View 1: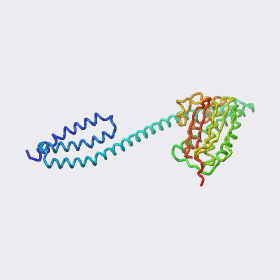
View 2: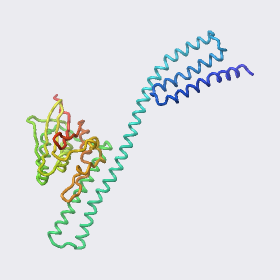
View 3: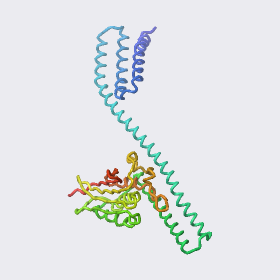
View 4: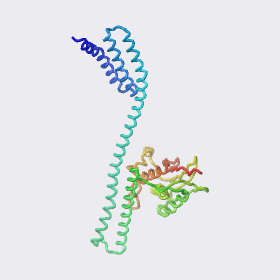
Length: 342
């Protein structure tokens, strides 16, 4: 047998068991941290190389063997720290990729749920409009007062459909990152006053007290007046809808740590603690006690008000949070950075 072939077979015979044992260790330790697995995969070829050279040399500690050991030791000093760094990097990347996949699955699930319940909600006013229109066309109602009432119901359902479509469009812009705001210096006190004034009539019809507690000094922030007005309107309307007759809704302005804060608190039914982390999701509809209905028992709005509010607040580099009051009801806090003086 040629000498080269004999040495090749001998090297394979010595290194194969080392590789098999190393592979077995890696498989056995697959539940261990990724860093350890990376180090093991680096050490396996180094150990196999040493054992192969040792076996081919006839199990003799020759000068060439010691030179090989020195080279392998130098390689180990370089590769093991690299393996540790790569292991940590890969571990972080794996965790990040896992989180991204979970977020994508959650977003896809949220979109499916959104389409399902929006489709259901759209059918309700559409069916009402169709039934009322057919009644008018077939002259089922002919009295002037009844015709006016039917026309008013059609108008209300059309307005609700328009609001739902607007909310869907706004939510799509937020999710697509296509939301652009015209930012300017505005006083949050003026925005809060306008929102409270605009919703005073709705609060009075619901027999709910709506008040604002302003600050004497301006709360100047860089933002979009229309976007912030929509945020506060969503919160105020939501609070009025969930507050029983005789209750209170209070809008409070405050300032701390160079951040303006607007709080909307109600004396309603509150939110279940298990639901608090989910209330800003676009597919979240709340429990029965938190699902707003009008006098006819029909849900109002699109159910995306809080999700839209969060998206608009995020666009202002702010934060929005919700918590239950100790004495009952719910409180939403919106914080936005104040304009830093020049």
